[in-house]
Structure formats: structure tokens, C-alpha cells
Amino acid sequence: MLGEREFTRFFLGYTTSLLGSAMAPVAVAFAVLDRGGSGTDLGSVMAARILPVVLVLLAGGVIADRFGSRRLMLGSDVLRGVVQGLFAGLLAAGHAPVWAMVALVAVWGVGEGLFMPAFGAIVPGLVRREELLADGNTLLGLSRSLSTVAGPALAGLITAAWGPAVVLLIDAVTYGVGALALVGLRPPDRPRAAGGESVLRELRGGWSEFAARPWLWITTAQMGLFNLLVWAPFLVLGPLTAQRALGGARAWGLVMGVYGAGAVLGGLLMLGRRPGRPLVVATVAGLAWALPSAALAAGAPLVWVVAGALVAGAGSAVCGTLFATTTQRWVPAELLGRLTSFGSLGAFVLGPLGLAAAGPLAARFGVGQVLLVGVVWQVASGAVVLGVPAVRNRRWEEDPDD
Image (tube, rainbow, N blue to C red; front, side, top):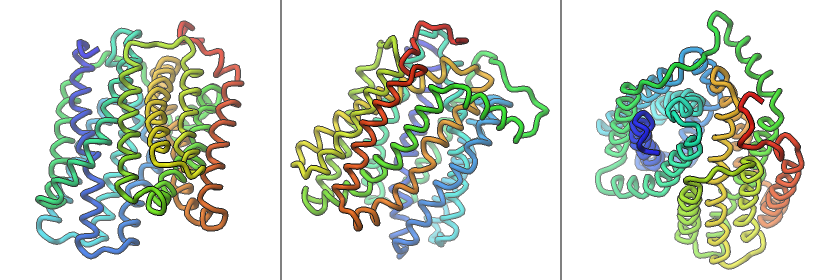
């Protein structure tokens, strides 16, 4: 797979920038707290990153389809690198009020929201042989999994030794590496959306194409409700349960670290494999997300929560790789940016609501009950999705135009 020159160049640049991106949130959090910021201040800064991502996703899809993914990704990397460089400079100079952090993080979020749909659309053009597309997505998923494990750990060490400004400066440099990799890319020309139409008209056209593919919108809806009902409560109530009954922060760190290790393992297992019914395998793998929540809801010992996290991490890698590959194979190139943006928006837009609601709901109904709702949802929704012919009958050997 890494013998594909264009893909290899992109992979190395993307992996480098991804590591910096995984380090940055730790630095931002301590930048706020080290200057006497409150929990409310920290929440404001974190929210300032998420909201712009959601707001610009759809526009990013239109731009990627109209002008090409490489240009948009290059601009996004340059923008984010400049922002992180400015942020590092303000911190080093001791002049970084909360409002300035909010503004910089918001621009950072704009860059991320533009990058995401373009990233989903560029991969097929970098893998010349179709049979290697799944392996390409697997390697990119492995890169993401490894960065989520290594990035925060490195950031913690560097922040403790030299302060958050150094971490953000490193992040700025890694975006530069990613941009240089994109500059040198020469992916083959692919069909693009016709220019001349308004953004709104192109979005309407993209929505029509998205809605015309039941396998795509059904799996997107499932993922959106998963983030609302399963993953968001797990991220909020998992640490709470760990603090009360499992041994505190160290126990929760172990759970999330093993989840990342499981994702790496799942990615390795996917290399060289191309299931005949990719959406069936992806949906079955997604059922594993119910396991750690079930262990927490049942009050199980830490070892069972960790075991559930390991299997869930592996399932997440399998699920993510196969959904990405299926979308890239069966969506025409000139629509891929917009349809990827609709999919990303649908999958993540309810997540912040779930994060905000998990605590109050747990206070009203109990932690176990809230987590159990997610477990039941994940199993039931998986069964429903597997019963949909458009999902169950999609086979790898089908013509992409079908």
C-alpha cells in the first residue's frame, strides 16, 4: 500500500499533522487553566472549536466538489498552522485573554470543518488500484488511532516541561508539514461539480443525491443517534463512574488507552481484507460499542470495562474503515465532498446535545439507566439497519454505478 507514491506522501504529511492536532487540545486546556480561567472559561473555549466545524461542514463539501479537495485541504492546513502559531506567540508573550483564545480556536474550528469533507473526497484519487482502497482507509484509521494515544501523552509531558505554547508551536509546524505534502501531490484529474451554480443550489443537489441513497442516510442517522445516546453519555458518565467506583482518573485513563489500542488492533486486522458485504460487517462491528457501556451500567469490575473497551475500539476501526471505503466506492467523485459533508454533519451534530444532557439525565434517572438506554439503542438499531435491504445486500463486487 505504501508503494503508492502519491498516497505515501499524503499519508506521511497527514500523520504528522494529525499527531500535532491530537496534542493541541491538552495545551489549550492548560493554557486556559494556567491563566486562572474557570471551568466556564474552558467550556467556552472548547465549544468555540466545535461550533464552527458544524457550521462550515456543508460549505466545505461544496468547495471541495467545485475546486478540488487538494486546494481546500492545503488552505485549511495553512490557516490552522497560522492560527496555532499566533496562539503560541500570544501565550509566550503572556498576552492571551480568554476572548482571544476563543477567537483563535474558532478560526481553528473553521479550518477543521473545511478539511473534513475534502479529506473524505481525496483518498480515492490517491489510490490508483481500487482493490487497495480499503487498505488505504485502514492505514489512515490506524494513524488516527495511534495519534489519539500518543498525542495527549506527548502533550502532557511537553506542557509540564516547557508550557502549552511549545505544544501549540509544534502543532503549527506539523500543519506546515501537512501542507508541504499536499503541495507536492499530483492526484489524477477527477470529475468535479459544475461551477456557476449558487452554493445553496449545489447543497440542494447534494442533499437530493444523499437522500437518494438509503444505505448512506440510514447509516448516517444511526451514527448520529449513536453519538447522542451511546458515545456522549459514555464519555461523560464513564469518568464519573470511574471516580466513584473504579479507582479514579488512572482507571479511566486505562479504559480509554485500551480503547485506542483496540482501534489499532482492529486496523491491523483489516489490512488486506475486503469483506463481500462491507456494510453488514461494519454494522455488526459497531455493535461492540455497546460493551463498555453495558459493563459500566452493570457495575462490573474494571477488568470487564477494559475488556469491553478493547473490543469496542477494534469494532470502531473496522466500522470506520468499511463505511469510508463504501462511501468512496459508491459515490461519484463529483459528489463525494458534499455527500461526505452531509454524512459528517449528520453523524456529529447531536453529539454536543448528548454531552450536555448526560449529566442532568443521570442525576434524574441514575447513571446506570442512562447508559443502559444507549446499550439497548445500539443493539436494536444495529438489528434494524441489518434488516434494510440497501444495507444488507450491498456487495463489494457490485458495479460502483449500481
